[in-house]
Length: 154
Image 1: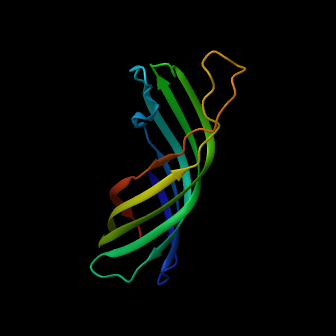
Image 2: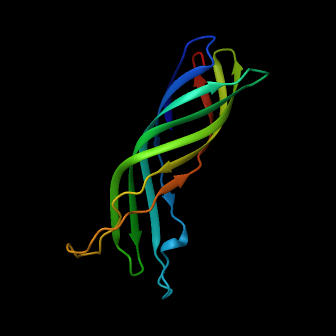
């Protein structure tokens, strides 16, 4: 994840534009009943525009965030009766989270957790069949826990 944050000094509100990329193995929902196991992988790539609300600072500065975004998600399946198949779709997303910021001179250490929900896309079609109807794809959700260094003024 990379981001750029903007805040007017002394205001409790700020904005942040961030970009995210990840590769995640899916859960076992698509394993079929004939013990033909498949491997699923999700690759979300997207951007969010978040509103940040900084709470009154103590030794650390806690904050809340939430926003909307656009994600291009690719889901691939190998093995089992479902695979090989893949699909990709660009859809809307939303996120909410909490974080803390610890200031050390010009460096700012942060720890943050977010819940991200990406809407389902068009879904999978039958392999090697063009006349198969497409069904609504699965919604992608993930909880990134981030730790890092922020440069400049928060």
